[in-house]
Image (cartoon, rainbow, N blue to C red; front, side, top):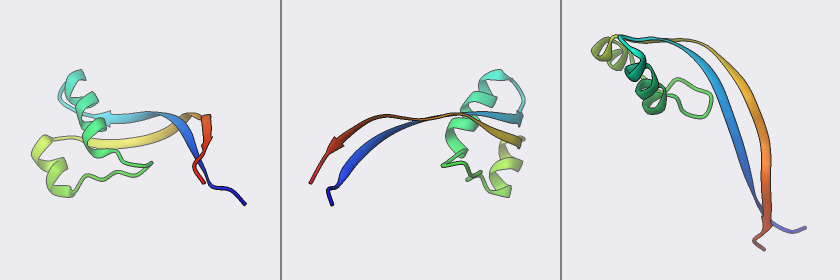
Length: 68
């Protein structure tokens, strides 16, 4: 059996309540990990935001290479 490195592209649609559009984008980048909300209650209170539904839009392997 060989070992491979695969490239996986994922895109999500995330509902976020935030003060403005720029903050909504930044908050998703900062606090959304691998399909989990990595923010703490303190983060949500400090930045005054909350996340709602998340929907995966794209889940596609775009390449693979042999590494062993």
